[in-house]
Length: 446
Image (cartoon, rainbow, N blue to C red):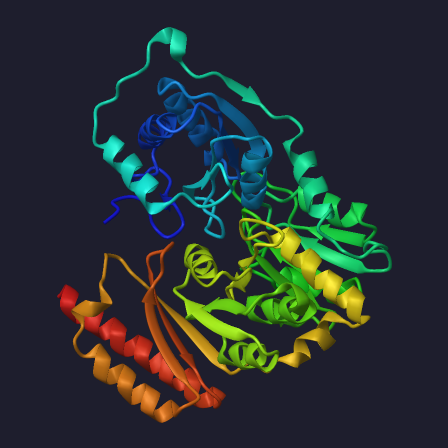
């Protein structure tokens, strides 16, 4: 069992263990020691726009240097840019300082291998083993050096632009782009504008504390308003680290990750072998629509790491989550909000259709998600009564319904999800299960 690494690296509240500068410095040292056993290349460090990123960047740099590893600093760039640049510059690893869609007062660290993939479990376990050892610095003459890759954003911009198939680019499209005041605030507008789109940009004025605050993939109200006010063709919302995508059609309606994945799959049938990977949270309507395309549908655990594992297991190339993480291994080794948006725009251009029309190919089932905030660690297996409560809810939903209870891998939450044909019943059951679970948690605490 891992002590620190979760489904998406290490994440938490800044100033609370393990998200402290002393721990991050030792983490850099431990990672450097493990990586140095397998090679002598540099390690890249990138970050989003959180104020705490400066502090953790310096701490990581110090730790890696103490282990004798050279560092290349990228500054604020999206998470998928770091995956790409790790491969592009032949680095042995890349580290992202980001808490993705979380508020500014959280931060975290994600690691990529030299192939631009999440670190394997055995590497993470080896790093955790080193963390238990006392610090031992290399001698002064062997300390790592640090330098900056000044053209990192431009390399990534050109990489993204190369992924649009349309020869005419995006000419004629009017797009609103919401950068969540996050890591993509410079590169995303450049990509779409240089491809010829008429652009209106929001959420691109980071101040260190406003990342994801009222903007981005988790807060789309401002984007929906801007699309309608500007009479735009569509809106694009990225999250704080740029690996997640939610879109808005010209009517102001949200187009989520399930619908986007369906649109991409339909447009790329000739390049998809066998099937699509979704998650336990993927809408049943999307599963049915994917099967109607003649493709198999596989459900992984929630988290892009598990989507990637299942893609590799079944030798597939396309998968994603309702939250907007979409992975296309024909184009990238990681979820990439900008490249995913370009795939959807390519589908619009190829079909001469609006985003609103393209999403009509699938019918979403009513789905209700209720989050229960936790003040302490809770294991769902501790509550014997849950089994009968879930069984009763599933009985009411019938064969075309689902209930899912799961702990978030990135936040102190229990998520209660109910899905079925009858919206009223779905809402009632979701709130009812959440209330019953909250009572069980409170009873156990007392």
